[in-house]
Amino acid sequence: MHTASFLARFDSLESIGNLVAQAAREAGFDDNAVYEVQLAVDEAATNIIEHAYGGEGKGEIRITYQITSDSLILRIYDRGIPFDPHMIEKPKLHLKLEELSPRGLGLYWMRNLMDYVHFEFTPEQGNILTMSKRRIAN
Image (spheres, rainbow, N blue to C red):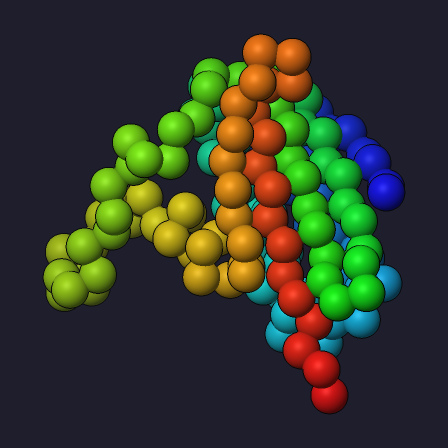
């Protein structure tokens, strides 16, 4: 298990992306899968900064990753406002592009880019987002 902590700031997103790209490469993912993992984690971290903490510099984002025989498991921790994914409306993807809201697709993308996405909150650890992606056998 590997762990890293970052200030909840937008200028931390590049370092977070580098960490998860390294983890995905270590797990044996191709460039496309590495990008998918980076995008999912970038969406999650951005949402933590904007919504859980309500802005930059108000907390920390801790990321752990574990590589198993067939997947990469990421956990993202924050101590911001508790998040309930059931409170988020599903995006209205049937609308024309110009009618779509530019916001609200982060959760949709995370669920479509990763194989497993689970949110939980505990008073001891705060918000915990667990995401995993399986390696496709060649």
